[in-house]
Every structure is written in C-alpha cells, then in structure tokens.
Length: 331
Image (cartoon, rainbow, N blue to C red; front, side):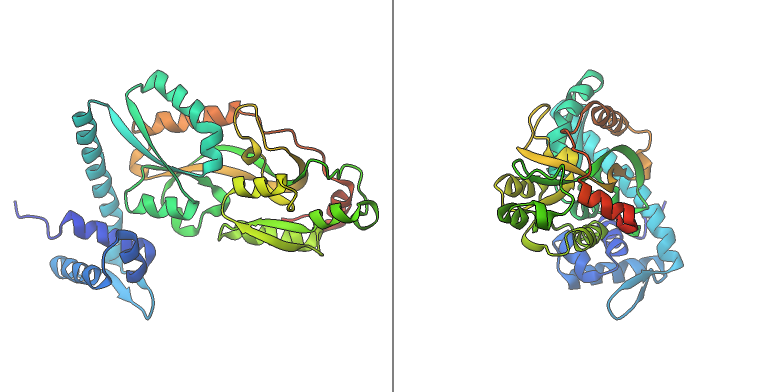
C-alpha cells in the first residue's frame, strides 16, 4: 500500500488555515512562522495534485477539494487525538484525560459538582481545565488542544457551527448595583436618587467580550441609561462584580456569575432587566457524540446546571419597566 500523500502535521496546519482563513492567524495559533506554513500547504497541494485554497488578498477560501479534505481531516485528526489520549492515559494508569475550555464564572460555580458526579461513573478520568474566553476555547478546539468547550451561545460565530453543540443551562442577564443603591421604587432616577447614587448608576463597568453580546449591552446602556459613562472595561465577570461591590459603578452580568460558591455571593443587588438569558452550551468535534468520558461530562454539567440556584434577583425597577413597556426593551 502506498503511503498517504500527506503527513499529520500537514493536516493539522491545513485545518488551522481552513479555520482561520488566514495564514498569519494560523501561524500565531500554531506558534510557527508564516513562511513555514506556506511551504507545508504548498507541499500538501503538490502531493494531492489539487489546489485546496483560493488565494485572496487577505484571506484564503477553501476550494471544493479543500472542503472535502477538511471534512475528512477532522475525522482523521479526531481519531489520532483519541489514540494519543488513550496511550497517555495508559501510561499514567488512568482511563483518560478530558481537556476542557470554560469561562471562569461557570467553572467556579459548577465544576466541583461536575467532578463529583463524574467520579461516580468515571472515577479514573482526569479533568484538564483551561479557564479561557470563548474565542480562545474555540480556537483551541480547532487546533486539538481541547476536547470540550463550555461557552455562551451568544459568543459563537458562524464558523463555530461545525462543532457538535449541546445545551447545558441558562441564566438571566441582570443589572448588578451596590447593595446600598436601592432601585426597587425608582420611577425617575434623576429626581429620586441622591447625587452619589445617580453617579454610581451612570458609571458603567463594561465587560469586554468582542462579540455580539458586547454590542447588545452597549445598546441597552444607551437606551436605558443615556447619561452613562464607561468607567472601566474588564475581561472577567468577577472583576466587574468586585468593582460594583466597591461602589465604582454598575454592570450587566449573568446572574450565576455573582455566585462565588454554592451559598456565597458577591455583596451586590441584582435586578431583572428583561434581557434574554445567557444560554450555555458545550462544543466538541462531532466524532465525540457518543464517546466517553465526553458524554458523561456533558450529562454531569447539565445536571449541575439544573441543581445550582443563582443568587436572588430583584424585580425590574419601575423606571426600566416603564421604558420596556414603551417598546424599548432590548431584543
């Protein structure tokens, strides 16, 4: 039997370029030089005798042959990854290592319960946890550094839809304010709040996500707090809540992110704002649909999500409800 016209390294590089549509971006993901990647792709195309990419000025688009190879390469690399993980597990005397990419707020709230549930069924599986942003988790999935990603569905781009997606749980987006800023009976903040509380309400701690989520939140602030100013841009819900607790401003966060542990929460008040819920999903290669321990992990995560209760959420403040009834509620 003749050897295949490509190497596993060439396939890995091909998949990275196919995902990013950019030689420069793929080089950064793989920590290699762009000329080296270009040479590997050129050799791969020479070996298979067909062009795999249509070169544009800034991006690469897959040809029909490239689309075919991309589908097959994902299956091949998934099988290779399973074999490598199995050998590593055998060497360590365990049944497997499950690499997970997850937001820190979800990990902190759910993973202890998830691990306890998994231990009953897969006691020898080791969880390798990476607390990363959704964009990083998805890139790590493409480059086979993760097996499962746990992300918000609102953060997903169309390029992520090739992964197997499973719903886990959802929690509402809420407005977090310092505990002493009582909005429960406020109809007109400009008239009813003291100067200090008006300042806090109009000081926004913005969570920077780089996604459609960020645009929706910015639109909400513009509609409902038109006199606000951004006092800080942060990249974790934990820091946003810590700043709210310190009376630096207010922030829109998922309710579950305010839960520090099973019972403790940040010392802030959370208000319903009528916004759509954060839908948390798992992503993995479709080849792992019925594989273990992936299936057990997803089941345990879903059960942990059902079991946990977010901190108490106060009803929508009157001045926000009045705006919502006027047809200004965010979509």
